[in-house]
Image (cartoon, rainbow, N blue to C red; front, side, top):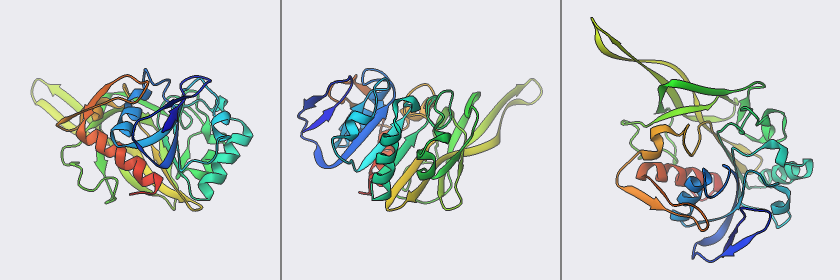
Length: 268
């Protein structure tokens, strides 16, 4: 049995999921909106988690004991206390995982400002100290640049695209796994349709902090930034977390996020 928290109170649910590892997932507004995507994938994969909505503080959940993985995704920095930051940092230093996923309230973002928080020390990337959002009319292809258990076997020869992300820079001792490559489309009368690639930016970086694994995904898990990535792969996967909206996603999308979570959790 594992509890999800979508309000100030907790609700227990029985799901038959694996409870050997515990995950705390904070952000993405609510289980009836953006959080339904990652929550659905976690449920489909049999990974138990506790959830904190984007308008709720994180501190109460941290008093219930350490978790094996902390997922922070589009979660306001104002919901933290100094003690909460230190509790998570200590847990990661001692072996827990830390995963940040992009959004307007992740990294620096529009209102994230994690660049000035203790999490900046633990994450495998350096953040901007100004608005780091990259939003574009162009498609950005996901390009694998390193072999890794998160990526191996996924069909990046037919890569998905994303619609936006936070600009991040890998730390010297981190490993960059994915880059976003801009695709320009032109249709001149005398040349026809032309596709060219342009700028590229870091998209997925992994590393370590103390004994814990860390990961930073610069794009979002849910629309609109996730773009066509959410539909990557057939057959389709239908999933629904307890108390959440049902989602339907591509099988490669579901596999990617399952592996990302399992690797950072330390079970892949």
